[in-house]
Length: 266
Image (cartoon, rainbow, N blue to C red; front, side, top):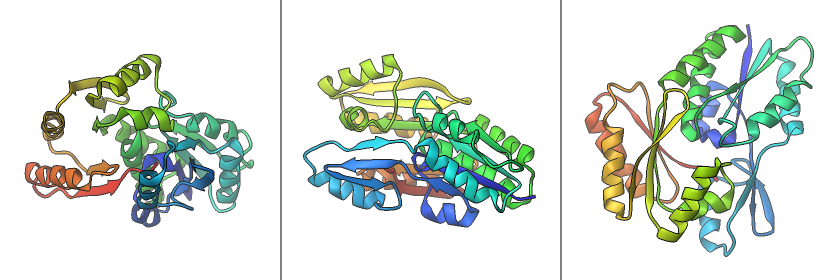
């Protein structure tokens, strides 16, 4: 049984993980100035942030089209018995809607399932990894979906938004109304938000801070409060020192667990 696992680049999976597990990543589009790039194909995260630092205009991102997903499904179907496509929750991104439309154009004989990870960024990435590992072991489509579903229940994200201006301006996430209002207020008052996504998509705030050091302390407190996590990742935009410090603390808090450190994509 051959099952292929698909996601989009907003899952923030490291390239080495994508290669190791045979995951297919459909890139988002990034517009910087007058140029458009495919996320992770035409531009790396490091290149993106370098260009962002020189740009006077905020970047814009757009999701892959249904046609983009349909082409990927058709290519994979030639050597697959089934395809599982996993994406960010529709409350944060429209990619899953495009994938659902594309599912209707998949070739006969190769079923395509589209799954809401109920998370964002590497939270979605961990779900994709669980599915890909099951697929690598020869599981059928139903079993691969079950592995992904179990990972959804176990995945938690804690994050800090230090500059809400970029989150709103870049259109990386489609925010619900009250989040959008709070975000716009944050760009005026310049506070930092610490929040959590847990238990298959529930969202709660963990603090609002004007002081950066206090926000980081709260973030670390939240991150070290979980009993024996299976896998840990620390992602950052342009703060490698923060990420390394947090990763070092997590290594001490959870001996024997490796901690992935990488950059967020656009």
